[in-house]
Length: 305
Image (cartoon, rainbow, N blue to C red; front, side, top):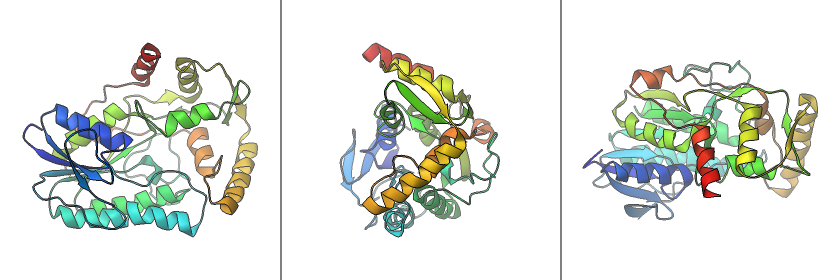
């Protein structure tokens, strides 16, 4: 990357910030695009929902900016996410004008109705359970049609994470954490592995690639390790799936009235209760090897406590 001028959208965010720092560490000149400055490099203001970005002088684009979350179902939430994840993608691709683009998508685009014990890139991409999954699928379709490299990580975690592990820890009640259904195997993605893939993918053939840690994790063991590393003493108990699904429907109905994010959703139940293991063969065939693990991250949490 030495001497390459890399634009990183969403550089002030969790994933974009890691990509920006890693690009700078490898000798690239970084241009951060977003509403706020990133951790390194030049900042150019960009509101993905309303304008095209300024890519003057840029060689490569890594698109991490996205509207994220699991909002209550409804047209307003869908429209807000579409403005960034779909319309913002169209604006970015017009501005890129043939430059190499690495577009960070999500494994949430995969159809939850089909088996996901081993998910390759050809898995169906319909039937998403929330606005995030639907708009990411629509946005990545534009990126693929434009010849971009599309990365599909699952459950990104690591230093600076404001979504995955903090949400998990917040669900502990009275020394108990309820998880829907029995134990399952799940792919997770260290943010360091994602950042490494984003920069490596600049040289990959156009198309979609799964990105995750080298091996999947047993859900209960991983959650237990996270709780211990954060000093949280809690028992993991299994909530029967029918009960979890009923609770999710009730929470989503209540959230429709308030306009907030539901405490539990169909998407969250699905993501925690069914096996989702990403097949990394395509990325590995390009020479990519994910080096970081959840144990590495939690060892650092303990050291820094």
